[in-house]
Image 1 (cartoon, rainbow, N blue to C red):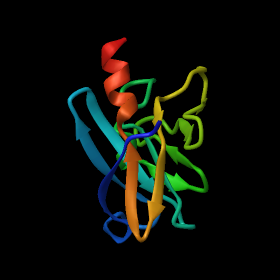
Image 2 (cartoon, helix red, strand yellow; image 1 turned 135 degrees about the horizontal axis):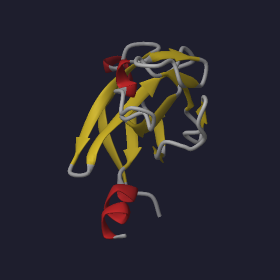
Image 3 (cartoon, one colour; image 1 turned 60 degrees about the horizontal axis):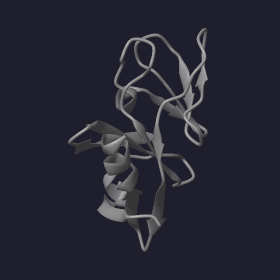
Length: 111
Protein backbone atom coordinates (compact mmCIF):
# COMPACT_ATOMS: atom_id res chain seq x y z
CA UNK A 1 0.00 0.00 0.00
CA UNK A 2 1.28 3.43 -0.89
CA UNK A 3 1.43 6.26 1.61
CA UNK A 4 1.26 9.45 -0.45
CA UNK A 5 1.69 12.88 1.10
CA UNK A 6 0.71 16.19 -0.47
CA UNK A 7 3.82 18.31 -0.97
CA UNK A 8 2.22 21.28 -2.74
CA UNK A 9 0.68 22.56 -5.92
CA UNK A 10 1.98 21.48 -9.32
CA UNK A 11 2.34 25.16 -10.23
CA UNK A 12 4.85 25.55 -7.36
CA UNK A 13 7.34 23.46 -9.34
CA UNK A 14 8.69 25.23 -12.44
CA UNK A 15 8.15 23.51 -15.78
CA UNK A 16 11.31 21.46 -16.47
CA UNK A 17 12.45 22.22 -12.92
CA UNK A 18 12.50 20.72 -9.44
CA UNK A 19 11.79 21.30 -5.78
CA UNK A 20 13.51 19.56 -2.88
CA UNK A 21 11.68 17.58 -0.22
CA UNK A 22 13.78 17.18 2.94
CA UNK A 23 13.38 13.89 4.82
CA UNK A 24 15.20 12.43 7.84
CA UNK A 25 17.18 10.22 5.45
CA UNK A 26 18.14 12.91 2.96
CA UNK A 27 16.67 15.01 0.22
CA UNK A 28 14.28 13.94 -2.51
CA UNK A 29 14.16 15.98 -5.72
CA UNK A 30 10.66 16.27 -7.17
CA UNK A 31 10.76 17.09 -10.88
CA UNK A 32 8.15 18.47 -13.27
CA UNK A 33 8.44 17.72 -16.97
CA UNK A 34 7.26 19.88 -19.87
CA UNK A 35 4.21 17.57 -20.03
CA UNK A 36 3.37 18.25 -16.34
CA UNK A 37 4.41 14.76 -15.23
CA UNK A 38 6.12 14.52 -11.84
CA UNK A 39 8.93 12.22 -10.75
CA UNK A 40 10.84 11.89 -7.49
CA UNK A 41 14.49 10.84 -7.17
CA UNK A 42 17.13 10.99 -4.49
CA UNK A 43 18.69 14.44 -4.86
CA UNK A 44 22.17 13.03 -5.24
CA UNK A 45 24.01 11.83 -8.32
CA UNK A 46 25.79 8.52 -7.61
CA UNK A 47 28.93 9.75 -9.37
CA UNK A 48 30.09 12.67 -7.22
CA UNK A 49 26.98 13.51 -5.21
CA UNK A 50 25.85 16.37 -7.43
CA UNK A 51 22.45 17.91 -6.57
CA UNK A 52 20.13 16.52 -9.25
CA UNK A 53 17.52 19.16 -8.35
CA UNK A 54 19.87 21.71 -9.93
CA UNK A 55 20.24 19.72 -13.15
CA UNK A 56 18.69 20.20 -16.56
CA UNK A 57 15.34 18.44 -17.05
CA UNK A 58 14.75 17.08 -20.56
CA UNK A 59 12.08 14.60 -21.55
CA UNK A 60 11.90 12.01 -18.79
CA UNK A 61 15.44 12.54 -17.49
CA UNK A 62 17.69 14.99 -15.70
CA UNK A 63 21.32 15.81 -16.46
CA UNK A 64 23.53 16.16 -13.39
CA UNK A 65 24.90 19.70 -13.10
CA UNK A 66 28.41 18.52 -12.20
CA UNK A 67 29.47 16.03 -14.87
CA UNK A 68 26.56 15.73 -17.32
CA UNK A 69 25.47 12.24 -16.31
CA UNK A 70 21.88 11.58 -17.39
CA UNK A 71 19.50 9.98 -14.87
CA UNK A 72 16.19 8.52 -16.07
CA UNK A 73 13.14 9.53 -14.06
CA UNK A 74 11.17 6.32 -14.41
CA UNK A 75 13.67 3.97 -12.78
CA UNK A 76 16.61 6.15 -11.77
CA UNK A 77 18.91 4.45 -14.28
CA UNK A 78 22.24 6.20 -14.82
CA UNK A 79 23.25 6.81 -18.42
CA UNK A 80 26.94 7.56 -18.07
CA UNK A 81 30.37 5.96 -17.88
CA UNK A 82 29.33 3.99 -14.79
CA UNK A 83 26.27 1.85 -14.26
CA UNK A 84 23.78 2.01 -11.45
CA UNK A 85 20.62 3.74 -10.42
CA UNK A 86 19.37 6.50 -8.18
CA UNK A 87 16.59 5.61 -5.70
CA UNK A 88 13.14 6.70 -6.88
CA UNK A 89 9.80 7.37 -5.18
CA UNK A 90 6.34 7.14 -6.69
CA UNK A 91 4.89 10.55 -7.47
CA UNK A 92 1.67 11.74 -9.09
CA UNK A 93 -0.58 14.74 -9.64
CA UNK A 94 -4.17 14.72 -8.41
CA UNK A 95 -6.39 17.77 -8.55
CA UNK A 96 -3.40 20.00 -9.28
CA UNK A 97 -1.57 18.77 -6.17
CA UNK A 98 1.73 16.85 -6.17
CA UNK A 99 1.73 13.67 -4.11
CA UNK A 100 4.86 11.66 -3.24
CA UNK A 101 4.95 8.18 -1.70
CA UNK A 102 7.22 8.56 1.31
CA UNK A 103 6.47 5.11 2.75
CA UNK A 104 9.64 3.83 1.09
CA UNK A 105 11.68 6.32 3.11
CA UNK A 106 10.64 4.60 6.33
CA UNK A 107 11.22 1.15 4.84
CA UNK A 108 14.71 2.10 3.69
CA UNK A 109 15.48 3.32 7.20
CA UNK A 110 14.30 0.01 8.73
CA UNK A 111 16.47 -2.10 6.43
